[in-house]
Length: 430
Image 1 (cartoon, rainbow, N blue to C red):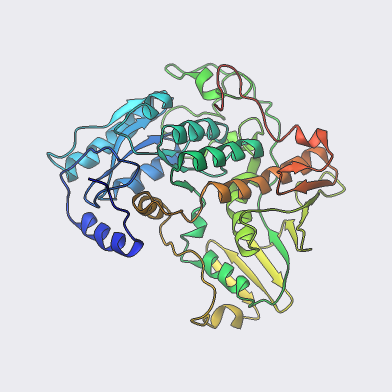
Image 2 (tube, rainbow, N blue to C red):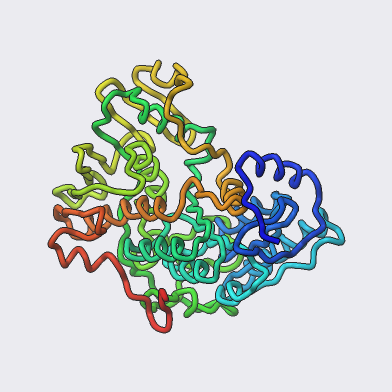
């Protein structure tokens, strides 16, 4: 019997009941990637069980209509503790209804499982693109951490694979959904003209990525270091890149351009994302990148085709300046000058942003409805691209012209060389 598409209203009603009741069905296969009933659990696998991965694991364990069935991780202690966490939780909460959690060290084995419907990818940044593309080809719905990619070219490959295979994709830019609605309200105020004509945006995040110069250290037992390096150029092990065991900090691979996009990309993927949203540039980007004249690690300026400027630097996470006022928005604060901009409510006829108050839940809801998430692959790609463009500007230290339609620099072969890095053999995007 064909499966029907649920409307958002019907889904919200049904999933509320599903979360309160304890369904006994633990496994299913999605037919045409539609969910026949809110009582069918979505079988989920986690790829990467570091700091972010553990956060996602704990979050998805709380959803009654989701079941974690596999954890994939290269580091043996993190792999084992992920499995233990899942099985302990379900043994206490779903007695008699849970088979167990499998563990893997190779994500390709996860993607080969027919009973897995969706994957959460929480690997280091250089390991985002290939699993995303291959998961899309395997018809798995995807939640991928930000920044979406290591390069702009990788992002376009992800977007194309997601579109071709019609999977539901969520980029981990949770500021669109969470933090007490501060960011979404700031965007709504700007888009409804509360600060007049917007002129300047300032995004206060860290500096660009640097080349990795870490010395080689003794390789810990059980870690497949060649697989951790994966598509990047090979270098010796260093615990700064991949700490041993279950660490309680964010590893500093984020500093190095071989593996990530630096502090600029780490938090910039969040705050530039909000800026793009406020500017209604979610599916576009700037046309000019101008780094500072000296060797400073902030001060780079973007210019959009409409003349709006966006600066790397400022006093708040995101500052939005218009002809009639200014909004300062951070994770813990939303302020304006004059104060009435944020104090006076918007009217009932105002433009409103996509409604979402829980980023992970939004993805699960959209897996069921097959609707687009609040931060799909195209938006994640465009927000990450801002960070990559800034990095390239700092690395080359000269003005650059950018075509957001073709996602190429204008008559600049040197700059274009930074747009895509071919994976180290035997890895491939295809």
